[in-house]
Length: 295
Ligand code: G1P
Image (cartoon, rainbow, N blue to C red; front, side):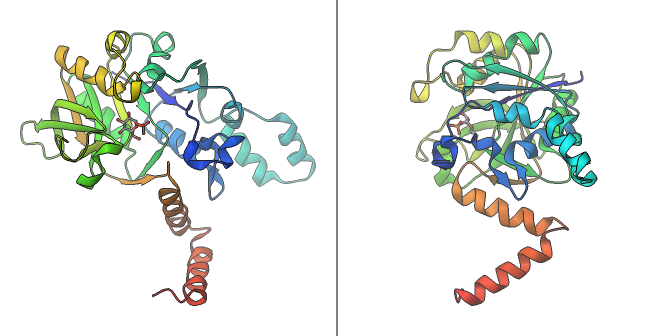
């Protein structure tokens, strides 16, 4: 079954990027000249998604505006003959159909996803979290859609190996490999942010999921979990009791842009990967190595 919609929760306060996020949504902080959310929506589009559903909160209008047309700016660019720039911003305005839903209280990721229930309807859908950007030849959400379609349109969680000392930052998944697959497992359990001493594995989700609509039934009945929040992880465990849930070790390089170190890493790497900025970034790095005598 075709997956047409992606839910992208963007209601978080972005405290790790204060004071920038006092006034600017963290999703709008740019890596080079594209806001972080651009990379995430691009992944959705390259995965065949036709409608993006942002779960927002107050102060996040800039995200919707970014994906909308801006006629005043277009007019200005036409008048000043900046046609290349005009094309660039027009393209973004036409990228994808966007719907926004306000999450009035921040009650957790599970609650955020549940807010999308009426817009998603009775269809499978994707959930993409924007704190981590995954890059590679095959978009990660597309990889998960393919696994879902191969397995009876089941729910699928994207996972990656992490440092076992870091399990308390993520939802950790345990499963059994299916048939002769090396990357796809049937999930047996998922634990939200376990201490390394009790983590069932070191396979973590960076926030990429495909869900059957039944996830909403689970989200409606789960109690508050870790951190006093309604956790998506708890709903996934409940869903796994009723139907098969798969975990897929995806291909691609992950950048944890939700914190300063990951953000700096992504900025340098993306500049090096990009044809327009690669030579510039190499020159800057060389100069800095000399200036600060970096060994
Ligand atoms: C959420 C999820 C967690 C997942 C993580 C990925 O946690 O609850 O399972 O591994 O996103 O970024 P958060 O980082 O929002 O606390």
